Amino acid sequence: MRLKRTLVLLTFNEIEALPKIFDRIPLSCADEAFAVDGGSTDGTVEFLRSKGMRVLGQPRRGRGCAFQVALDAAAGEVLCFYSPDGNEDPDDVPRLFEKLEEGGYDLVVASRMCRGAHNEEDEKKIRLRKWVNLAFTFLANALWNRGPYLTDTINGLRAVRADSFRRCACRVDGFVIEYLMTMRMMKLGLRLGEIATHEHPRLGGSSTAHSWPTGVEFTRHLVAEALMGRRVE
Ligand SMILES: Nc1nc2c(ncn2[C@@H]2O[C@H](COP(=O)(O)OP(=O)(O)OP(=O)(O)O)[C@@H](O)[C@H]2O)c(=O)[nH]1
Ligand SMILES: [Mg+2]
Image 1: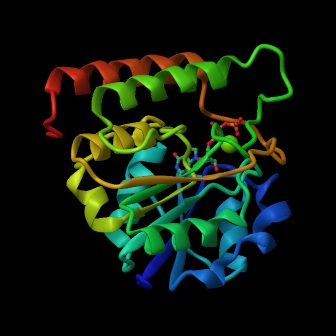
Image 2: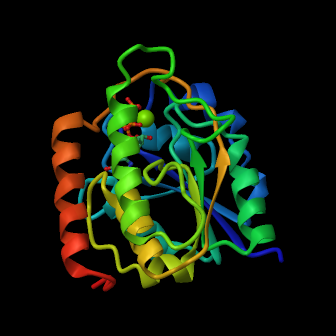
């Protein structure tokens, strides 16, 4: 069943990477597309507007806050989140929408961990970020997933049904938003699927997801969710 689709671009100071990838983003596969910007000061917003994009601001910094702004503003029944810094393959956007619609899923994640996928760290010997992500993913699956194992609970490139996302009542501002959304969807017994993706290096600029504070935040939320049992609020 074809659902009404909203494509959301998430940006914070991405003027180095964004112009290199923008023309490859398949905006026309969605019924509406807009950007949510975390307060860029480097010309990112001006670039997006010059391309005819609607750009929404956020009351506070952080990806979690951006997801909430997008959910409130979206006219679509399904949202796909795309971060235009070069990590994510734009060709996955229509694949995510299609898999969600055809499979009747509530959430479809572009996995960097399943067979046929590629992780940014796969060329390295020590894959610290990947291994930590795999551990968080294992714990979420072991605690709550009653469906098929989801190999990447954290990646931001994903399509989600708006009504299912609302049921999760995620009220966080930071980078933990995707992990929290996935944990709560598992708790609610919703249908989760994945496609294999190829994660590329950034095309410029720098990450604001610093490993230590992000890891501590993930642990704090995992423990809080475990203490809440099957409740989501
Ligand atoms: N709307 C919005 N987007 C944000 C915010 N913070 C980061 N982003 C975007 O979210 C995406 C992911 O952030 P990154 O800092 O690249 O984190 P990462 O992908 O884990 O790190 P790298 O692998 O080094 O790229 C990028 O497109 C950022 O521009 C924010 O506060 N608001
Ligand atoms: Mg990135």
